[in-house]
Amino acid sequence: MREGEPSHTASWVAFLRGLASLGGAPVSQDPYAARLLGWPYAIPLRLGGVFPSVSRRYCAIQDALDGGRMRHFELRSAAIDAALIDFSREHADATLVILGAGLDARAYRLKDVFARSIEIDHPSTQPTKRRRLERAGIASDHVTFAPCDFSDRALADLLAREVTGDRPVAVVWEGVTMYLDAVHIDASLDALAKYLPNKSLLAVTYLAAKPNKALDLTVRAAGEQFRFYEARERFAERLKGHRFRVTEDSGDAEWNRRFLERPTRAGDDLAERLAVAIREG
Image (cartoon, rainbow, N blue to C red; front, side, top):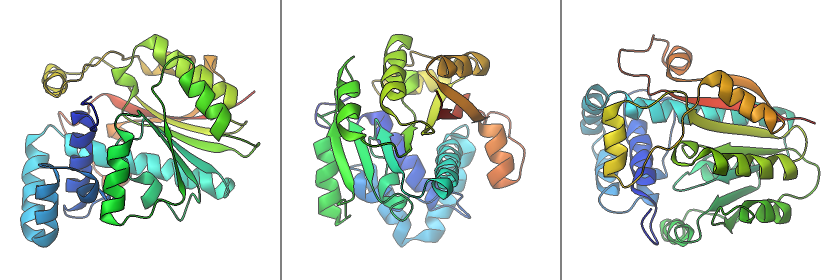
């Protein structure tokens, strides 16, 4: 992570999400990506909005060259959105909590679904996002920005302060666990289990297998490092140990069939999966 700036990986993922939105028949829209990204990521997205035929061609080339990463992040976003929307149908007054928010624009894209959102992120990077939101004229009155350094007690103290009442909460923990170790993951799950009301939702992504060498080198070049991966069954047991019952576990194969109505192409499966779980007990 760069001091005062979103991490390279957060910017890269937001860029690919925004790029996929400009392609033909996108399954997930992120119209805010270009306005939340800094230089140089924002430039191609803004040009793509002006020249749609060029952006569609560029998306097709990117999709063919990047090992499915652009489609992966687009599909991951669509799968999480679908889980949140389904949850909101039963809990119309739920609060959305985004853990490690980065450049996630979900609080703004789903403003009609969640009237209140809480973005939890590192105090060094959150002010940059707030400045970009203000500069872009993106309303954030419905969002509580909660800085957190994610130390052992910080998240628990923040949740105790911000999550009040007994109304279920929807928590998104997207694209983060693979950069943490098991100790910090368990500490965060402990805090969530303790302070989230019963029947709250947790949508968390994780690596179910060791990443391929090309992806590992790409992440290292961006200044990050993969630290955690765990098989699907063991990750479900980990969540169960923290009072979260997994109701859905899906990845590229399921997302391709669901949203694109096609089988997963060779090389498309990046081993990252989404676990949707409900807090019980």
